[in-house]
Image 1 (cartoon, rainbow, N blue to C red):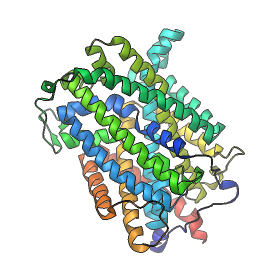
Image 2 (image 1 turned 180 degrees about the horizontal axis):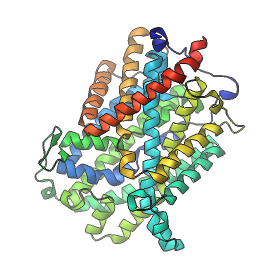
Image 3 (image 1 turned 30 degrees about the horizontal axis):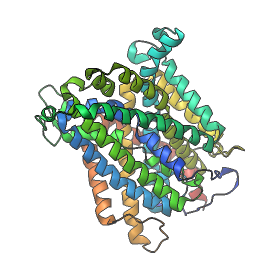
Length: 467
């Protein structure tokens, strides 16, 4: 058994037969997929949560989280162009580190993507329910989930079904719709900066760092500090990893994956810094701390109610891009693990349109149940932990590959890898320790359950076991 835990998957760049995905994407599709995944619920809501934990120093929290994610993005770009097949961090770990570590990473990605899809769907329903009531006359009571005293969150279920149908129509078609919606979302954030930045007042930045840099627990039991905020704001940055799951469907992976991953991350860092500076400088952070709609609140405080309504409407229209990107990534992780035999192989069937129909329907069923019946707070609690584990694994794979196979073809080589790799690993480790203790506990429980499943099924049925 010990040898089977460490067996590595041979690199097969072109899987054959009915389990091969169709190459239909180019770098503009990947850029839109990345920006669509990154810019969403995080910047629209978490800046208020971050401000409550760090004060005006939330700007620094954005910088810390962004720097760590930028290093991780460079590691992802190198690995994605070196191993340009579906599966992202799971596949890299299987090829480089061994089967049991790959299982843990794949299991963690399933957790991350499922929770993000479900959480964003629930968050979207919070914007959509009032509009549905005013436009269609649907009583809000019929659209409430458990968090609001209801039974099923119908808008959240509905948007997941719509996205699933879009993905079933084909990868290129869904990517084209995603690109159009991303433009709507970016335009809304540009409008926010245009109206908020002229109201910048340096007095709103005092005191700049009221709670200190490291995470600390106050007398009220609330965790505060720049790093406590960064550990939550980290949610607003990841999403570029969803691009790596599209490697097998990319026309020119050696070029397009690097452009998509690094380009989308760089664009989003610039957008986030501009939004954070404009928000904190426009009004005192105490006015929008912990607000579920901080950007719209700031615009109303500035006497711009119509612009605030435009921002909210844009969120309703464009937030499904986040659901689409992570739904896409989740289905591809499931697909690759099923193709490897770690999950039932019958799920890894590809339709005539080049999409994994069975796994998409299975993914839709899982996230629909979560979004329909589980409160938002419980959905979002574990998403960051799974992502941090994946980022550590990708950085480790990059460093091991540099030592084990230094002459392997690399279309993109991360600069100063022996700085970027350790910064990613140590930074993500520090962010993980900055998460609430209950989140760390539930993440450990999730992986214990996953290892039991692996021992009972995955280890015996893995394709590598027959090799």
